[in-house]
Image (cartoon, rainbow, N blue to C red; front, side, top):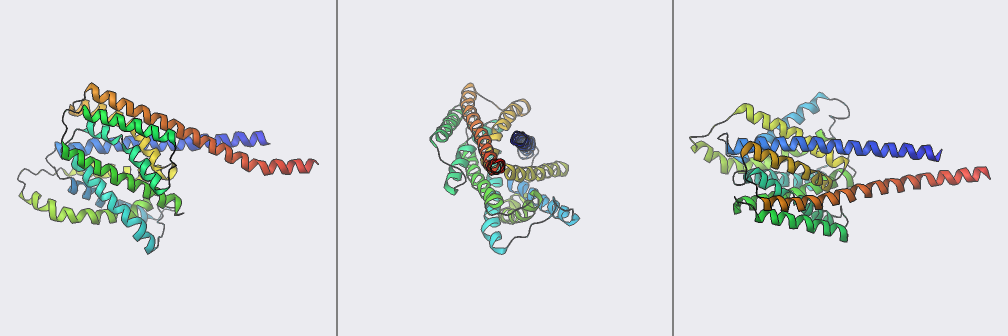
Length: 339
């Protein structure tokens, strides 16, 4: 019996890992699509307004989540009720940080190439790790710290080799990385630590309207006056709808992935997406990439891969130890019965 139980638990672990990697693949695909579409909208379609673009995303996400909730399908589309205290302490900070991430991140596409932005984004595991240590969601160890140093060194080399280095674009991307790292950690705490069980739709249902409100303020006072004076403004509604729909699907995938794994694991998986986007950026938009950048990013990629491998090994070990602890009382009972 113990051997059969062990095999069952191993199959269960393999199934869980398959789900996690499936969520990672879905997130990588949707994230790459959103980035490429947004770059085209902001840089090539005659619509250089990042706040307006992100406002449309959050408005679409809010409406789509509300419609799905009204459909009343049990389980997936149910809304988890939350208290006013949880909304103030949990949802509003996430909404504010999400608005900052979207605003700064999309604005960076006006100044930097997709390939360089993705290289900068590879530093996300370092920032998420530091934020996770501060919030107690990650444990600081020497080996992990060394991994993060390797990643940071690679990003520094890649930045040094960038041809089109625009300081304001780099600052915007750094702000986006910092706000996103804190946001992802807070989402993890909301979903896992506080014992709040929310489906991806329910999470987006609560957070998207809050994010839209905080984006609507700068949109009203900063971009609307500029748009009214812009004689070259071109609004491609089908393209904006495609961008909004892809962003909605991506947000669902983000919350699903964080609920199944962790914020840091999501960013580790993002390194594979970054390689894909660098290649697509060169092929589609002609973004310049130097050998120095590739060497630097390759070093960062190696550091993240080592971290990801150690993370999976630790997860397998913890699961095996949990199985052994569950089996031990049963084994003792069986021994007592034979006596």
